Amino acid sequence: MKHGKKYVAGANLIETGKQYDPAEALDLVVKTASAKFDETIEFHAKLGVDSRHADQQVRGAVVLPHGTGKKVRVLVFAKGEKATEAQNAGAEYVGAEELVEKIQKENWLDFDVVIATPDMMGVIGRIARILGPKGLMPNPKAGTVSMDVAKAVNDVKAGKIEYRLDKTNIIHCPIGKASFGAEKLQENFDVLMSAILKAKPATAKGQYIRSLAVASTMGPGIKINASKIN
Image (tube, rainbow, N blue to C red; front, side, top):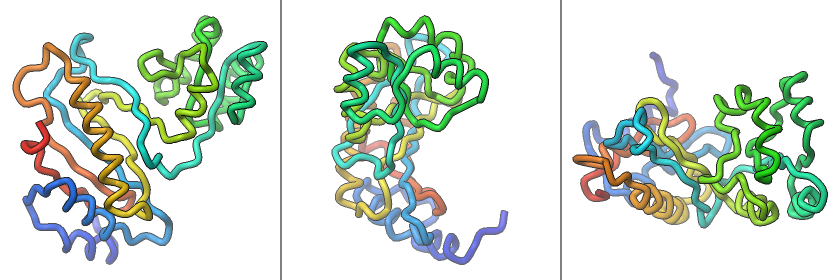
């Protein structure tokens, strides 16, 4: 695959095979983000667990101190008083069966996070096949199934992100924008890393954090020394 001049220039700043301390890596990732738009900084962690086993799942949510830099569109499934609370908290879309129907019939997915009150989960089950593969299905572990919809909306708007393993036992998360600078990215990185370490399954054997890397949207990956994190 042929890369552009900016990518190559960024890649030249990185020593081949070197694993950096987090602070160095985040400083470098900002320098390699040279696109005309404000690039997202992505975090990738490969874990020494097997996600096929229920007792080795790693999943949760954490509020990043500086958010992700992305405007998050929130859809809340709620009725009555809870629907009003969600609207007052700033949710972009609030509704019940009519929104389920809109998603079913129009394949409408103009939102980033779905929150629901527990009583709505039976209704949402009808669109689980649509929401699930896109990582949009509300989940109690992520705090997106809650009676306190106002807090759930506020947390998401403040920079709450969900982390979970993919099929290859890797967690991928945004930790901010290049414009944040290395210091704010480091604070977001530390909070996410701490949450992942706390979520280590009791049944996990051997090295928990197998590999770590950060990268900007258009830039090369920068490896972080995982042995200093475990």
